[in-house]
Image (cartoon, rainbow, N blue to C red; front, top):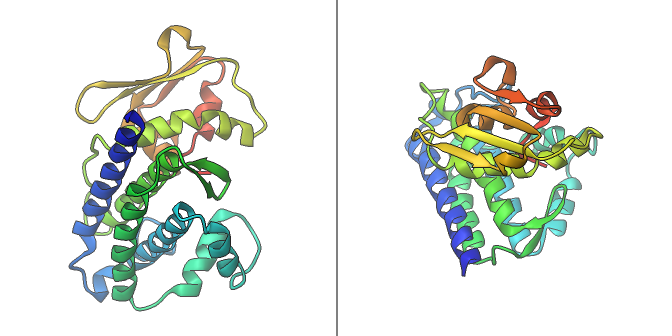
Amino acid sequence: SGGIGVVRQHVGALRDQQTELGNIVSGLGDDDLLRPSRCDGWTVADVLLHLAQTNEMAVASAQGRLREYVEEVAAQIPQTGGIDEWAGAFVDLERADPIDQRDRWLVSATSQVDAFASTRPDARVDWVAGELAARTLATTRLTETWIHTVDVAVAFGPPPPPTERLWHTARLTWRTVPYALGQAGLTAAGPIVFSLDAPEGTTWTFGEPAAAITTITGSALDLCTVAGQRGDAAGTSLHGDGPDAADVLRLMRTFA
């Protein structure tokens, strides 16, 4: 069915993104794994541990046992702050030998792809902010893996060039605009459209241009970077027209 095709696209993109990160970190020794990443206070190995932990969490979600997983972790870390503090405390709890952290991520990456490949795309699964479709969680995991791939890559040189996989992240960002605005107590004045310059030179359009009240334009890479909390829209190619433009550019996100 079309639904299975969509989830295979998502799973294939997730697999390819994990492969890109794997190609960067697979042969690294302790010294390189202990280099500072783009994530403040985290080494490359710490980023991989965080990804391993959240990959394992996604596997638990796909298998219907997220609640037990989270309760087990929550019993061991301070119950203060938001998601970022929780993630930081979880890394602090399980930080270990750098190579072991890298190898744990490699195992978790395979498990995650296998879990999504064997889950119906429209199956409802639990995640941090509530229930969502398995295909949406797979896209969320693809997006987080891409963000952290860049976090790791810049420890060794320039970021990897953007790929067509960003389409999934750009679409996720567009689809979650109502949620992002709602978290700030806002409601859009009307339909919001993204018209983005894709890495391969085409245009990606999300939404119906003829109905747009607000339109966001610029590079897909810039949009995904800003939505992933790795940049500010003001310093990019992004531009918005319409009553909700400033709020969308400030609040859009790729995560719950």
